[in-house]
Structures are given as C-alpha cells and as structure tokens.
Length: 113
Image 1 (spheres, helix red, strand yellow):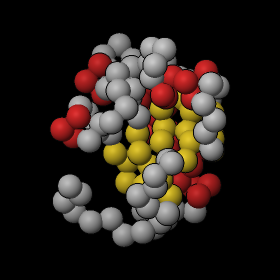
Image 2: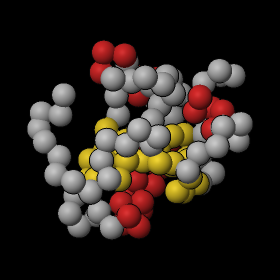
Image 3: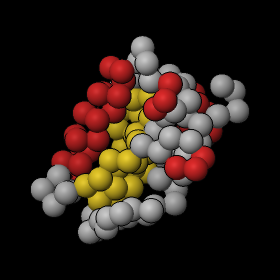
C-alpha cells in the first residue's frame, strides 16, 4: 500500500513519535491527541481494517500486549485506559490500515460517540 500513511510510517518515510516497536507492531503518539495519552498501535503488515483480520488474528493479540505494556510505562495502567478499534468510515476510521487507539490519562465517558 504505497499511499497508506501508516505504511509510510512503517517504512520510515514519515517520522512518528514512536513509543514502542516489535517485529510485528509499531506504536506512536497520535498527532491529534484526544486524551493526555493517545497512542496509535498498528501492525507492520498492511491490514485494511479489523474486518480483514481473518488469518492474522495473532497480530491483534500482539497489538493488545503492546498496549498493555505502554499503559504501564505511561502510568495509566492502574487508573484505567481505553482501547478503540474503528472499522470503516462511519465508525470513524480515517486511515484504512488497522490501528488501535490507546487512550488514557483522563476520565472516559460512555457512550463514546
């Protein structure tokens, strides 16, 4: 996916404020944060959305594990945090590359939308 902004981050063509990297996952600070801690967690492999996860379910668990480690490092683990995956434009997915938002550092409300 040559034009995918997240693929460009994976390839190093676009700089990101990276907080953690593994062989399969990259996590970086959101450029338009919606909470004091707002980190995007993406697979290195291009997967368009959570609806395309079949056959790649293991990467989703790796993304959650990275989120949990970052929450601890960011000091939000004990207070609580939210993990969000939007699927499709009507749900708020603006980049068609699977990504998980890690949000914390402030009270979260429900319903979120």
